Length: 311
Image (cartoon, rainbow, N blue to C red; front, top):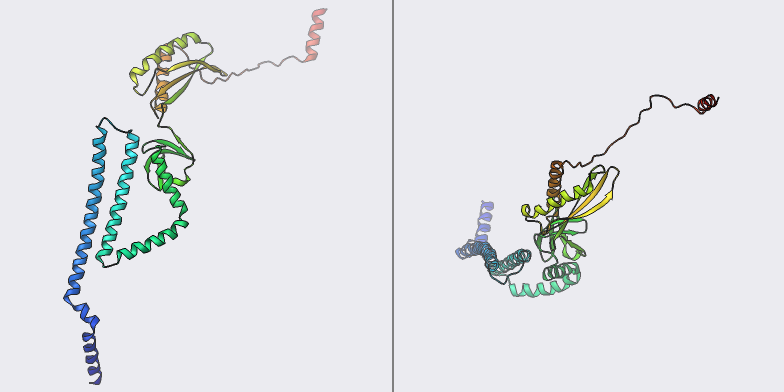
């Protein structure tokens, strides 16, 4: 009986405590429900704002592409991705601060404290600041843009994305290279100026070189009509080298950026068909073998033979 009375008194004390009263109060659960609904609404609005904003930026660039005053497609693609990323960061930051405010957290004090902490962290985050500043100048000076084919260090490939802090390069074999912008000291951009395709063709020594040059020149004059990637008709420079079994002629062709590999392959294909059609041989490696059926006479035998002839 005594234990039951003690338990009853303990339960009464718990029920009479302020904390328990708050936990079972309707106001608390209504407040929790309202706060949860607000947070869910903020998240939904954040997602909608991000999607609408990114679409709006994309449509603005599409409309600008039809105007008489426009920038290059490379620069448009770079600025498009950059602005979309900045919009995402800004919307997420505003959403985060709004959620904190909904939870009755002092946002002003948090921002003031973050400013002091950020100043302290800034001295230790010099690499981050350097990356952002370098990224800004890469975009401002148009050193390279999204879609360009570049070489940075040992990595070579297409620029997938240029951010304020990092740059992403996708190689043709599928590897994605990510560089902090501050580490990019030298860049080779293959996509700005026209490319040059260099093709060497071998002709056998037995062939008439002048006739071969005439056939090749007639062929290369027709190529711009078949391949729009050619800026000008290819040029036959003449004899490049003398090989072990061939004479090497060199052809150069100016193409639009990054199409020199394709045009070089097509020129080789056209040359092979043309030379075969005109009966001009493209030599292949040859191996000459000598067989000796009889042994050569020794010096003594040669002297005996010479003496016999003298007699």
